[in-house]
Amino acid sequence: MNDNKIGTYKFVAEPFHVDFTGRLTMGVLGNHLLNCAGFHASERGFGIAEINENHYTWVLSRLAIELEDMPRQYEDFSIHSWIENVYRLFTDRNFELVNKDGKTIGYARSVWAMISMETRKPADLFTLHGESLNYYASDRECPIAKPGRIRVAPSEPVAEYLTKYSDIDINGHVNSIKYIEHILDLFPMDTFKEKSIRRFEMAYVAESYYGDTLSFYLEQKTENEYDIEVKKNNQEVVVRSKVIFK
Image (cartoon, rainbow, N blue to C red; front, side, top):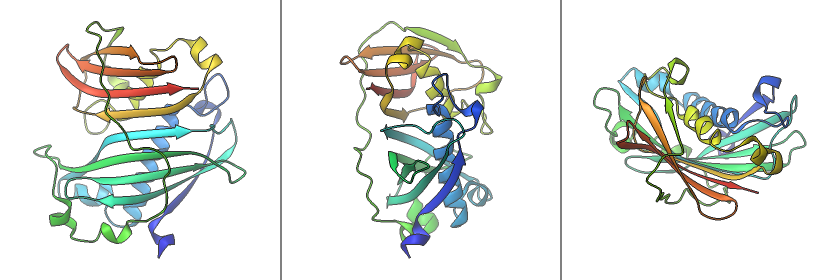
């Protein structure tokens, strides 16, 4: 039973998936996590393709990743994925990152909502799926903290970015992983020469689209901790993020 609740997916750190240190990038890891969520859901009958037929889709609301290490170039690694909780309007999904030697090197927590593709409003999971999603909930441990509140005080942006073709996904808005890449680009190269990312959080608040101007606000909380807020067109907050280096 528990084996049926947990999906395991194997990957290789390709040369174009690593940064100048030879380690997997956070953006690529984020893509793999999202793919694993999709694989796991599809294999159990509630993936994107299945629910799209009824004009619904899954959207990522929160993501928190904690790392001890990252896979190196050409190394094999695996990701385990499972559902922890199912609520009326959202579900908690966890991940475990395992290196080529079978050692756990990271965990991630995520929160997902199912929304109507027509109204963009959250759907009632119990009305649509009854107890079927709960059937796959697992008690497997995920020892990292859940995403927390992120607050940014600065009123002046540290950078601006005009969204382009390569930012836009199949849903017509900025891809959730692109925000991760743009946020990490706020930090100079020397930061990544001297430190690695210990914890990374994303909170997705609203959608942005092609041609929107994204403004990035950054506040340093401690020596290694930063909170970031991203607004579109100098108005609405679209995402908030926390980056903790070690």
